[in-house]
Length: 367
Ligand SMILES: *Cc1c(COP(=O)(O)O)cnc(C)c1O
Image 1 (tube, rainbow, N blue to C red):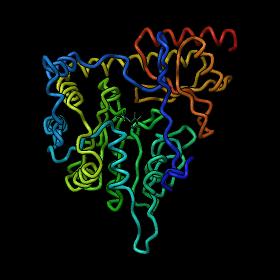
Image 2: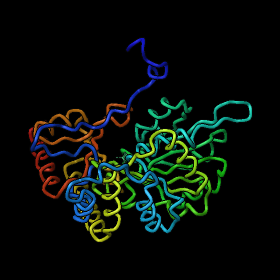
Image 3: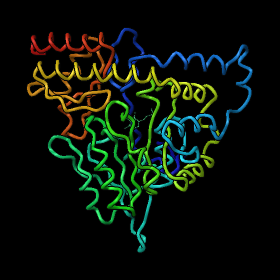
Image 4: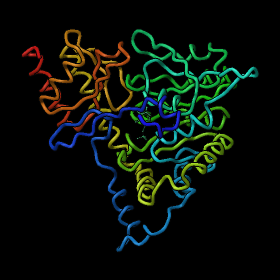
């Protein structure tokens, strides 16, 4: 604390990302990165952008990200003007909160933003940063999300949820998203599809039909580029214009030259994308089966992680014993209803096997 702080800073509750340990030889299954390297085309594109002497780095990148937006538009069957790119989808989400999620009724009362009680913990952080009024709705006993609950909140102005949800891994069907959009044309609906490539249905196909829909994607998970920081939003042109206005009031060049080149090459290598995402999904299904054999309850996952608990052992104790085996997984103490669970990122086959072996040993010795 300092008397030099602006008032807003006192209210902030910053997001706490999963640990990025400095130790080598750890098996890192805690932040949902892809276990496979990016496409070899990504390395080639970065090298081409650097050239022999990196002299292009003297020059600012394209502030409109023209090439990348055209490539993404083609991939999704949309127009480049329906695509907004940012420095990771976290930045894209931040601009969405400021530009599209803060609404009032005619009497000046806030129309709250709805999101699940168990979800991506950056949402409440952005609410405090931008003064957006939030209302959380409880997931069901199996941590399932029911969009009918959201339709029923007559005074709400907007809704955001990940599909599949984080950290549960459970998805909602596209038909439910469509029902929400049809029932509530007065609300902005943001679908955060960070994990959609691992088996859920994307709402990107609905963008042309619904003027209130925003779909957010990231290169950090299915494209193996968390270190490059690239994310994007798909929506109709007036919503994208709002995001551009915020971006150009904040940072004209959120994506650097290497990130633009890398992201474009990653999208263009469809075969590699297909191969790696299938490998992750196969490992997820194998890991789910093995954990179930060990007595874990594993939620059905459509993401690159599983959310699991053991009836005899606390989440904290399991996390600790895995750490002693040099395996890092994510455990959330809050909210309390998810404290029994571990969120385990899908690693390579060898990493998944090492995890299972460590758990077998730990459960045999009863931790
Ligand atoms: C990982 C994640 C993001 C952020 O991704 P970046 O593009 O790396 O900023 C956004 N939403 C959810 C639900 C995520 O899990």
